[in-house]
Amino acid sequence: MHVAPKLVPIAIKYVRGRSASWLCRQSAFSSTASILCIKLTNVSYHESDIHTSYIVSHVEGSSKDFLVGNGMRDDTKEKAMAGPRPVVLSGPSGAGKSTLLKMLMKEYEGVFGFSVSHTTRDPRHGEENGKDYHYVTREQMTEGIASGEFIENAEFSGNMYGTSKASVQDVQAKNLICILDVDIQGVKNIKKTDLNPIYVSIQPPSMEILEKRLRDRQTETEESLQKRLETARLDIELSKEPGIFDLVIINDNLEEAYGKLKDVLVDEIAKVQEANKS
Image 1 (cartoon, rainbow, N blue to C red):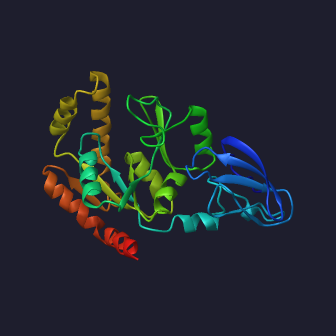
Image 2: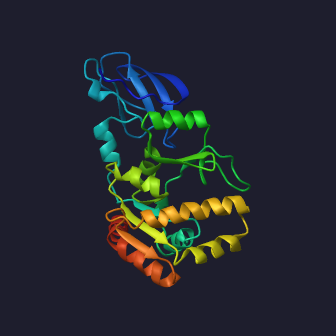
Image 3: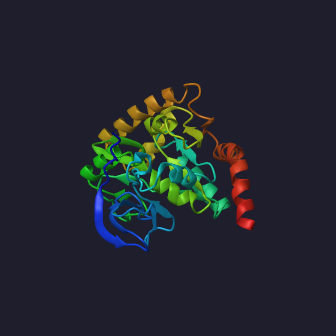
């Protein structure tokens, strides 16, 4: 017997459609308000007031039509994943990922978009919910992971982090190249999905240079700095495994590193620019 994944409810709503009634439970992990609708009569679909696509209900006797984690039937979910190939960017903190991404966003305005990750940590000063992260409780995060709503997740310094399927779909729906900034474990988790991204690793020239960059930031305690360096050593070793990344960039010269990053993305950039002209 097929059992539908459990969603984290943030709203339960009774909906009367054109020819059916529905009991709907909204997922906590989608900014587009994807919902789980259970059909109360024998019609097979209903156009939701809070979602632009058709929400397909459970059809009695046909478990394959039951809505899955992000509020979409499997074939609908595949269509939502269509669009520009996402870019998975990985590498240790201090390798230069953020700087390279800022350069990309500045040169190619309207081409790239970030998936907003979820985290259980508290917001830092100046951070905004829904912009920097989606801030959720550990219980919400755990249930979302169990229900299959996350592409990848990891835990660092006692806090959970993850990328939801819905956050990637939100970016792709705008015909943007979705950028996912994840650690090496996140890369391995994404490898198990059908996302089909371009995998790029940004690495420092050496551990000595990486340590200097992190110390120069003056944002870390000695304890947190040592944890980051330990994580970086593991990241660097794992990035050498064949087949993990499409491209590994050693960031010892910023302009050269940026040129290599653009080269591997040139085809996807051209597709988005061409589509935006039409």
